[in-house]
Image 1 (cartoon, each protein chain N blue to C red):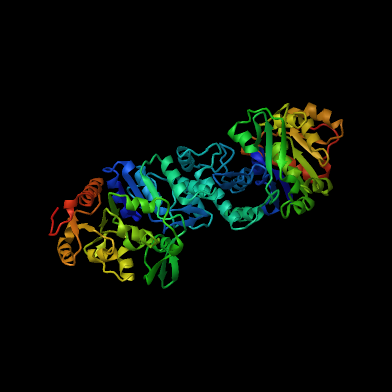
Image 2 (cartoon, rainbow over the protein chains, first blue to last red):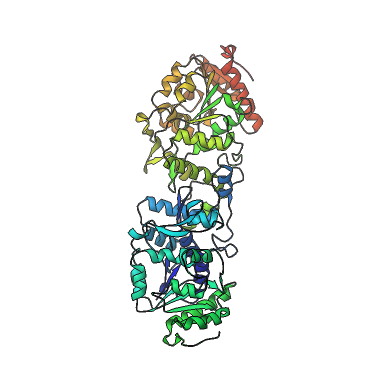
Length: 319
Length: 319
């Protein structure tokens, strides 16, 4: 059993590689829901959607989100009707938002809705929201506190970030199955997602960080930072805002209390060597996921170090 | 000021003609909402939509409903997800359903929402739902009582009809402006809609029928029955189920207590002659609305007899 904590486009790419290697029945995804938003009155969950579309083979590879080949006719009409259109809900994508909203309104939990939608997409892997409670990632900027989706999608992460918080997290509980999926896994993987706003909300749900610390299996994170910058998105800005260095060392520190091994890109081999001196186990491998082959190769390398006890190198490695 | 009671595809065609002749500011549409339904959890109002799209110049002429040139990608995806797809909500059409649902959820009344959506479509005519209360046209068939949309759209009006009722109507009130629009009109027109299920629900709202009876202006109905059959749809079946003849005489009887003049197709001239003997005022004119020119010509003829005091013929007329 492989359990993955994931969110964002980096997470979806990594899961795309994993699903080629791990039998669906042996794969559990614990997904960030801190980006969830009410969009035109509908409940949208960007990270659950990306993972669902990835596992269904429907994710747009060009965009990295939404449904492959989708159209945007409803969105265009909404724009003509004076409604906001910065969250790009495609026409096929809307089916998911509408169905999720309907099932939630009918009284189902987000876990139940997520499982039902996954089943209807023919997905056999288990997709778990981090919690059934409403947790919203809030970003404090000079214009005030805004949601992560407003910060990231509407405003293209142009605002300086003073701090990040996860509203509702302290009262939230892990969704059913989350703690057990961590405890019983043969490996727990942290996708190369934004640590602060994709993995951070998951870790903020009481009980999850403790489960990671105590779980019997190896906990392996893939760094989304290569060199001194994120592969994409605002992870650098947000790590800085939270007081962490934008480097593989910053990522290692962010996950420090439960991290067994950090997988970093080969070009960070010198930095990895330095990091090992502080007692952190680090594995170097090509981690840039441009093609499907890249994704599969990274997933294979991560699984190898996560599942094999000999894979905790004391010294430097080369791919 | 011209006030029109309308519903269905016949109503939309008639309004298409009227809007070419009557300044938008002088046109009020009182629209059937008995067909409204929750579709995928969204509030859909087929007759409000048809009139809105007609007045916005966006109605699909090919289909007679929905938005011209629309796609159905969300619907197709919903089908793939195992959801019902018999109500054909197009991608552009969905924008209306989503926006209406959001505004209703925000606490606006259906009147307010209808006015806001109309304004956003650039419509200057006044569109009024018959009521802000929930009234549902229910059709009793051998398989049980079903909604009108289920009877008409899902099951293609194949079931024998035992009776029709308007659930909720007796407790409903006319929407703000409805009674005043009837009282203050220079002419009140009843579109060539299905009398039982498009105009009937409007008449079932307490106060509306009385206002029609008492209004100072001429009340003119256009017969949707030509010869012994409806131009389209189940009006014949439903008139029969309600105990009315399927003929212009049946339509005249249906509207009897408030009808000042019935406009019928020229081919019903002999029947019109018979009907006049019973004291009903009848005007014959080409009433088949195949082209835009047909619609404008019918609207012009109806306006002429409705607005001119010399237009109440005592004898037979020919177009």
